[in-house]
Image (cartoon, rainbow, N blue to C red; front, side, top):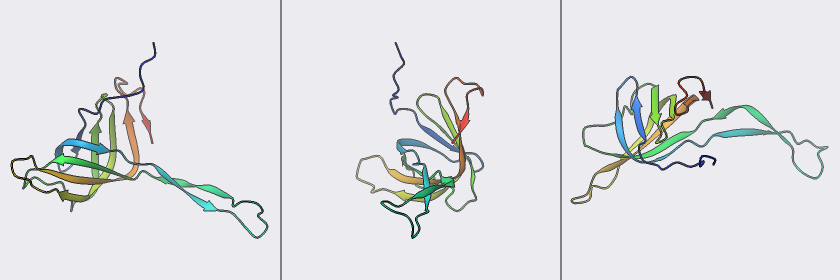
Length: 140
C-alpha cells in the first residue's frame, strides 16, 4: 500500500542561525513560490497575448503565529542569516532569510500570548527530506 501524501501539522520548529532566536510555532504558512512572466505580444500578435517566463523566481515570505513572551523578540533589525525550519515529517528547510514583520497579537486576560512573525526568504530553499541523510536533498 502506498504511503499517504499527507502530514499532520504538529511539530514545526524555526531556528535562526546567527542570532539563535527560536520560537514555538502555533501555525505556519510556507512560502508561495512565484515566477514572473514577460509579455512578448506585439502589433502582429493575433487572438491572444503571448509571454515567456523570466529566469528568476521569488521564494516569497513565510508567515507564522508563534508563542510570545515580552522581551523575547526575533532579530527584526538584523542582517539576513541562515534559518532552519523542521517540518513534522522530519524534513528540514534551510534558507537565508530575515524577519520582515513581528506583530504581537492582542493580549487577552488569562490566555496565552501570541505574535505573527513573517520571514522573507532570500535565494533558494534547501530541502532535506526525512531520513535522506544528505542523499536525497534538493533545492527550490
